[in-house]
Image (tube, rainbow, N blue to C red; front, side):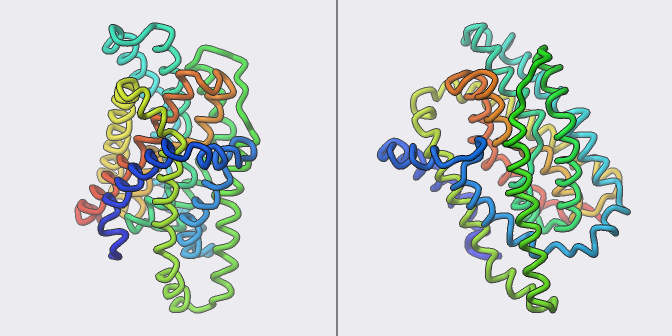
Length: 335
């Protein structure tokens, strides 16, 4: 394990601090980065996510995808958790905490906005970052790609109806450009580049050596992404720490609960660890680009719903790192 991976939690913590400091000290730089976007997808973050995803895509052997599809248990678990459970438990937790537990601390109109933001997070399983978590848990690259691809297809058809149902509205404007562009940028293009690279390298030995050389760039991309995300939201964190802490509570419960459900199900069904870990992490992580974009388009940039989705971004990396560590420690419990 490299020095980057061994002390990743330390680098991430430092990246959070640096991001907040940069966002406060040099707001003009942050605003310039924030303005570099197409269809609500930030291009700078997109490049960094590419750096994270590409090393894993080099490890994807297209010939193994057919064989991966013959192991349906992992795919069934992630689909059931992501689309039959996760959106509804997130909505329920939002109602419990903001309509009841935190009712004395938050105005009713703000509470409804926060619930809406949580619903958007719960209905958007991860697309890009899960490749990083899979790599850190030594997941099966081909099977992870299969799980993410199937979830993306389901998301195209299920996201809007589920969110509309849970929000109690019928006319929901989903930014399809964001969804399509994100899938192309974070899945299709890195996969095509990875396959092209494999063909150019030829032998398995050369592929392994190449992956070892570029693997640190994946970790550096993650660290730089954290710096930018916390830089973009640094002022919000400093201005409203109490509200952020309250929003984080149901998100944390949801994240650890969903992981526990998926991971335990995979263990009970004797799913191999290389499939079980990414399977559980997909539902735990969120497609934050889509959630933030929809929150802004529905409720506005300064809305409580947009703030709730941003808190989801802030909470995600530390939570996912803790779950990656847990998955690695429990590897021997799986077949």
